[in-house]
Structure formats: structure tokens, C-alpha cells
Amino acid sequence: MNCIGCKTKLCKSEGKDCTGIRDEMLCAYDRGDNNSTYRNADELVSGGKAGRFSRIEELALFCRLQGYERVGIVYCYGIEDLAGETADFLSSRGVKVGSYRCTLGGIRENMIGEGMGTSVNCNPAGQALAVKRDHVDFVVEMGLCLGHDVILHRMLEVPHTVFMVKDRVHNHNPARALPGYRDANDEFIESLDASYNMRPPAWLKDKIDNGGEIVILDLRPPDSFLAGHIEGSINIPLRDLPARYTVLEEHKNDDIVCVCGGSVQSAYAIGYLYSRGFRKVHNLSGGFSRYKNEIGEGIVVSNAPLML
Image (tube, rainbow, N blue to C red; front, top):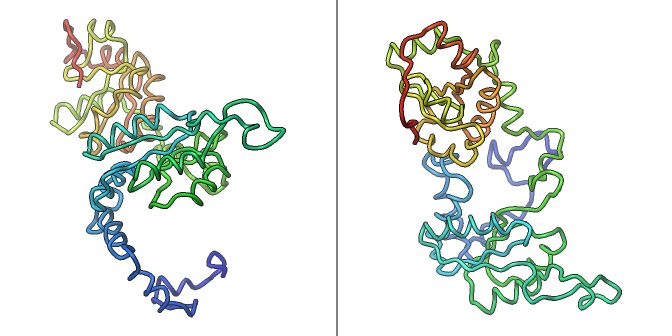
């Protein structure tokens, strides 16, 4: 078959069958728990829920819908921190989680193949066997090397999903190598208006005066913030933004204007926030210093920064 080369896509538009095996396909959904699994998968996106949950949120919900009591995270040692965060997230959602590092068993390469190296290497067969020994109901695979994942899949006797694949060049997102792939950075640059999302102080003052839903995010260090800031601002220094941006989640549909000393740090901040799903991001032109000089009023000196 060559579905990519098909010009009509009548399967989607008119429900046409070009395979000749549709009856066999339908019968497959009556085998085992395929039907209930399909329904539970649909539950993640039906009724307008598509795009509402992140993949890890879908994963936690799917485990609950499926009734998986023991979930095993099979992972590469190189992403152990991320595997730990995944385990913590699932555990916080009531999922019982075990974990299986690729180096378990302490097997050296030359124990598998004569003439290979002496370092302890990945052991996907051992991971599969350990999962079986522990009677795991469902496996979440994270970052196994290409080929090692093939061995794991061959040997697993339980359902599994791939949560993360390894791509050392493209930060574990192999789609980035494709010329047609577009990520949030591409979308951000193309979304910029003629002013590159720069907003003059008068624009912000008008928003404040008219009671608009706006978040003023001050990116300067705490000592600069305390010495003077726009009333109602939230202080998150730029370097802290990756660790703390989630406190802004409830404001994803509000305007967020980023403020720094000039406008440079804010340019980085609005791009970063856009990549995390915030679409109404603005850069205060000239930063706090320009706002103070041109507007003057509404400047506050305080003893403690307002933080979320």
C-alpha cells in the first residue's frame, strides 16, 4: 500500500475501503481487550478533549481507565532524571510505578558478544525479563537506543507505550530532522506582529487603567524589583523562568507583558513562554526604565517581591 501517495483519501472523506480486508479489521476489535482499549483511548480525546491534556496527563488517565495496577518505566540511564519525574507524576495520580534502568544486571558488552567492549552496557532483554518477573501490567518506555527497543518489544508480553525516544542530536525529538517539521520556535517567529510584540508604556498603562486581564511579569533580579516596580507585577527573574513558569498556567488565556531593565531579557522570555503554550505574550518596549520615565505613576517600592 502507499497511503502517503494516495490523492483522494476516500477512506477518511467517504469511509471507503481500498484494502479488501475491512471485515477482518473489524473482527480484530473483538479479540482480547482491543475494544475496551480503543474506547478508553477515545475517551482521552472525545467530546472536545483533544489538545486539553498533555501526553503525560493522557498517560495517567489511560492507566486509570485501563485499570493498570502495576506500571513499569523502562528507561535509559542517560535520562534517569526525566524518568524519575515521570514516575513522580504518575505516582501523584495514584499509579503504582516500578522502574527498570537499562544497565540492570550489570552485564558487560563482551558477555553478550565476543570481541565487544568491557563496559557495562544496555540490557533490554534483562529489562523485559525483570518486567515479567514483577508481573507488570503496562510498560512505559523512555529513551532506549534504536535496536535495543526492538529487543524489548520482541520480549515484552504486556502492553506498552513509547513515551520518549532517543535522539541525541535533536534533544530526543527525531521529527526535528525533517524539513517540514515545525516546532513552537518556528510558530513564535511567524506569529510576531509588525512590532515584534513590542508594546509601548502607554499600551500597558491603558490596559491597567481599563482593568483588562493582564499579567505583568517582571524578569529583573529581586533587588531591582524591590527598588521599584510597576504595581501588581509578579517577580520571576529570567533565569528562574524554566523552573517556575508553571505558576502562570492559569493565565494562559490572558495577556502577559514581560518587563526587564530594557527589552532584551523580555524578548527571550516571550519566546520561551510561547514554546510552553502561552500565546498572548508581549515585550514592554524599553522595559521598566522607559515606563518609569514616560508614565511615572504606579511605581511601587516594597520590602518583598510579589511571587506566585
